[in-house]
Image 1 (cartoon, one colour):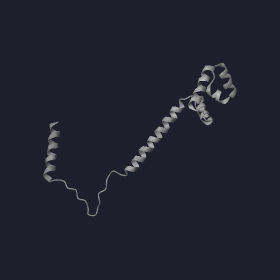
Image 2: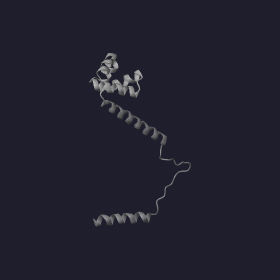
Image 3: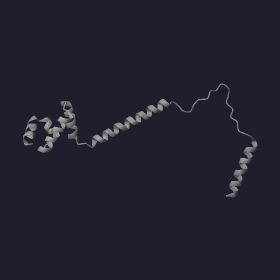
Image 4: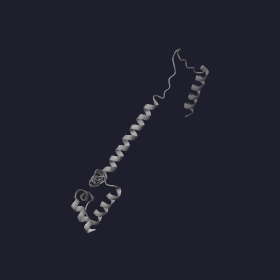
Amino acid sequence: MSLLSGSMNGAVVLIAQAGPTELFVPEGTQATSGGGMPWLVWIGVAAIVVVIGIWMRAMGQRRVDPRELAFRSLSKKLGLSHSQAAAIRAMSASSGQRPIGLLMSPSAVRAAAESA
């Protein structure tokens, strides 16, 4: 171990005796920044965030029952408010039917209202 450290010290002393190191830049050369294009980096970061957001939303919807997604979509198309959708959910829970079935069949809504 001392042989290695002794040779390293000798190399440092030899380099120090040669003089300081200087960097010569040719005339007319302009220094450039190594940062690149920061706006391109921000666009890349934004694109990654959007892709991750879309992926997370898709994974979240995958876990939801397809009948629930159909109920949400149909209630939006019918223009139901949140309170109306909640009332249909309550009627479906008390009658033992699915909420999407109540939305699709007016007779089922009447039957659920009568049984509740």
